[in-house]
Length: 65
Image 1 (tube, one colour):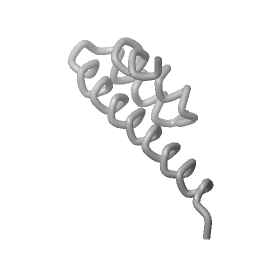
Image 2: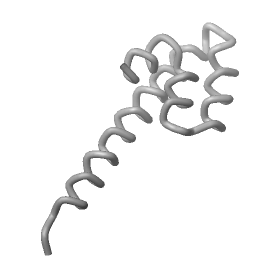
Image 3: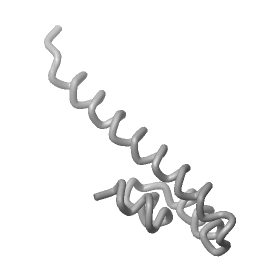
Image 4: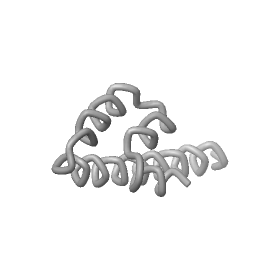
C-alpha cells in the first residue's frame, strides 16, 4: 500500500513512514510536473528502506543469544 502511495502521492508515503520534513519537500517537488518523477523515485526508495529496516529490527529482536 505504501508503495502505491509512493508512486501516486509521494508526500503521503513520507507521512506514512513518519518523515514530515521529507513529506513537505516531496510536496513542493510534486507541485511541478518536472519534480514529480524525482519525488516518486525518492519516495519509493524511502519506503523500501523503511521496510528493510523494519524486517531487520524484527529479525534482530527474535534472535537468541
